[in-house]
Every structure is written in structure tokens, then in C-alpha cells.
Image 1: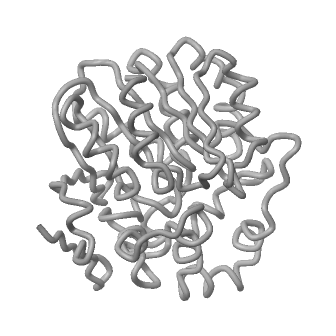
Image 2: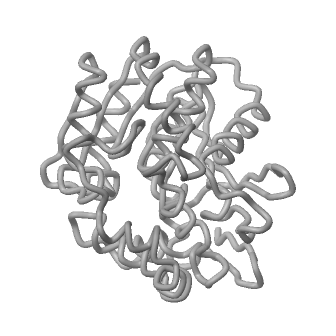
Length: 303
């Protein structure tokens, strides 16, 4: 089944990779904008939270593997995947709004059992902020190449991200015009050479200037100083992250990640010494693309 959706006068379709993404679409309207999400299977809920510039497609192997035993829920953040892609005048592309969106979705599903969170990239900060506000709803947590804190002391902010965050006159044409963030990620974020159909799937939603807004705003929202809009919320998560120690946690990490490198992994290990840690030396930021089957087995055993 080919899924099609027209947003900002541009049609996004799963044609060419529909066999990799054979899931039924679901939508919830949040503050006037439609959020797309997957809801597959039955059982204890597992919620997967993606980052930038991925979308629910990134978790497809896990959705297939876990849905026979669990209820797997995977939202596309507003601006990503098959969700609406409003302009920055219509939508506040900040961490707080992302957390509120996730909360609205989860509340609408009326889940009765404890939730397992599987997070990646920006999804780690979004889900951590939500979890700290909903500790009674958490069961287990799977961390993959992400952060729940400010930059570790030994880590410098990557220069390429600095250019996108601060040099707007360069970032707008590069990210919105040439799709440099999404297109370059399929070559830089995976340690293996991805198949053509996978590259198409990862980049398909970002098929026009207007539909790439989230890939830019995610980077611009990275808080580096108190002047940044999301600084206070990240500081709250940073200072309170220890409250998640009560939950079983597993950390899966691709060593070849040029952003979320070993400095971030070591910070997670320092804060959560009881967590089960698996380091994949030959995998990058797109861990589930590099090692889909091994990571799936580990997650199934952990659950």
C-alpha cells in the first residue's frame, strides 16, 4: 500500500519504499496541526521517539519485530514525516512544544500499562522531559545516541551545527533550499552504505523548501546559552535526570557518531551506572540502520 499525503502543495509518498513501511497511518489534531503516528500491535505500550532529521520510518524494523507482542506507538514530530509542516509563524518549533505534543498524543491514547520508551537524537531530550513529568507512567527506557543533558565538559559543539544555528543567511538556503541536513545525513549518519530505497525513505518527507522547516528549527533550538528559548527546560532535565534511575535502562550506542560521540555515552554511563550498555564499534548515529537485527534482539530480550 502506497501512502500519500499532500502538505504545503507538495505530495509525500511511500512509493519506492512502501514494502519497507507497510503501516497504517493514524493522525491526531494538536492545536490545529495534524500529527501522524504509527499504532501497531497489542500489549504493553512501547513508544519510540525520533530526532532530526529522521521520522517514524527510522524505527520500521523495531515496529515489525515488536508489534507481534507489544503495542508499538511511533509519532512523527510536527514538521517531520507525514505530520503537518506549518511555518514558524504557525507553530513554535521549541523543545517545550515538542514535549507538549508528545503528552497530548499519549493522553489521547489512554494507555493503562507502564510505557517503555525507545529514544534517539532529539527524541532523548523530548522523551526525558516528558518522562520526568510523568514518572508514574514509565516502565523501561532504551537510550540510543542521544542526550538528556547539556554538552559534556569534554565535548565542543560541532562546527557544522554551529553554522546552521547561527549563520541564518547560510543555513536557510542550505537547509531549506538544498536539503543539506537531511540529504547529508543519509551519507554521514550511517556507517554503512544505505540502500537507495532506504535513503529515499529517510528523506522523502523533506521534499520542498517549506517541508524542511523542522530540520532547520531543530538545530536552531539547541540551547547553548541562557538566551536560547529551550535553555531552561534542558537545565531542568539535566538537573533532574537522576530521577530516571529507578527504571530499568539499556543503552545502545553507535561509536562512529560524530555528534553524539563517546563523550555523551560516558556521561550516560556516569549518571546511570546500573544501565546495560552495548557499544557498536562499527555503527554510527543511525544505529538502527547500521545494526537493525542485533539491536532488535537486544531490545526484545530487555523487554
